Image (tube, rainbow, N blue to C red; front, side, top):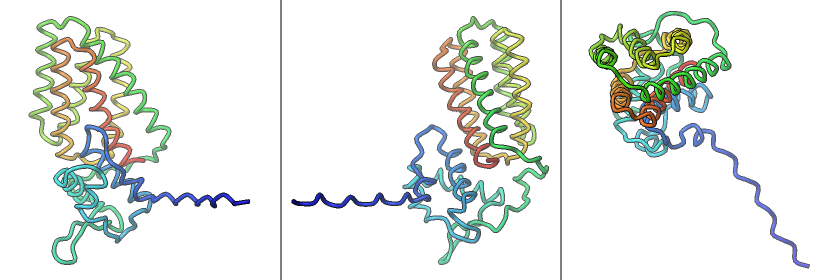
Length: 249
């Protein structure tokens, strides 16, 4: 009797391959930052070790080298990486993150994963529902003018004032729902979100991307397109979520 062929043992999962899996969302820069930080925090690339070559890492993540380079430069500015040029160059993980002008200096209390995910989930439910409702309602001239002014303020805000302007824009969108209880709940969640955002660096590439997303959100509201407004807000929130998870998890 012929024995069936022996089953092969499954190949072990390459943790680095999991960490650097292809990015599928529209937030390529933000997710690059999150993936690299996750690899560092999981110890897949230890302190002093070099990240995979830029060409290889960009191919693994499925992003352009320009996007990856921007993400690595941002993490270097934030004190996580050391980018070296020359024959023995590369991108190396620093022994510990350094205090730099691009990083927050305020010490944060211990943050649990549960607390982070609770805030992010509540924000997502409130803001997605709110922007869909806002785009479903008639938009008066005064309300439209206030919305456009808030959008303009985020685009012209100084770096140290950007998050204040960003908060005002998001609350301006929620005020369009005409639901005071929803506005109050969203304001409470926004305070929690701002506390989290204070614990991560401001990244210029992320700000530019956020402004593009803000413009799409406002455009969909003005055109009375609830589905488009919800889709644009969803992508926007996912980008912020990727950064918060990357830096704070």
